[in-house]
Amino acid sequence: MIARVGLGGLGETTLAQLLYNDEMIKSYFDMKAWVCVSEEFDPLRITKSILEAINAPYLSCISDIKDLNLLQVELKECLNGKKFLLILDDVWNESYNNWDMLQTPLKFGTSGSKFIVTMCTANVALTMHAHHTHLLGQLCFEDS
Image (cartoon, rainbow, N blue to C red; front, side, top):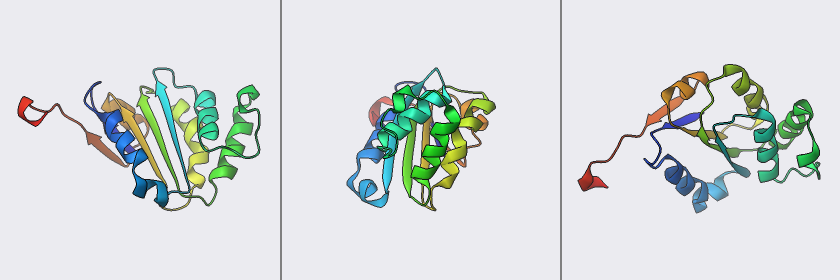
C-alpha cells in the first residue's frame, strides 16, 4: 500500500487522478476502482463502492446488501488472480479495526496490484501499515 500524505489543497487527489486516468495505467491493470472515503470510514460502504466500480458480475443489487462478509467474499472472488489498482481518496480513519476489516479481501489480487491512499495525516498511514509513505509539502510561490 502506498500512502500520499498532505494537507488539504496540496494536490494529493489531483496527483492520484492523473495516475488513475493515465492510458498506460489503464492497460497495465485488469481492473481499477476509485473510492472517495472522507471522514466516515465505513467498511461496508467502501466495499460496496469498490464492487460497483469494478462492475462485480454476480451482484445486481449491491446497494441492498447489508452483510459485510458476503460483500467481502464477492470482492475476494472478483480480485482473485487479477491485477488491480485501488485508490482510496481522502482517508481520515485512524482505527486499525476498521482498516483490518476492509483490507482482508484486497490481499487476493495478483502480484503487481497497487493500493494507493490519499490522506491528510501521517497517523493514518501508520494505522494502515503503509509500505511506502510520500509526504507532499507546500510549493514555494516560484514552483506553484
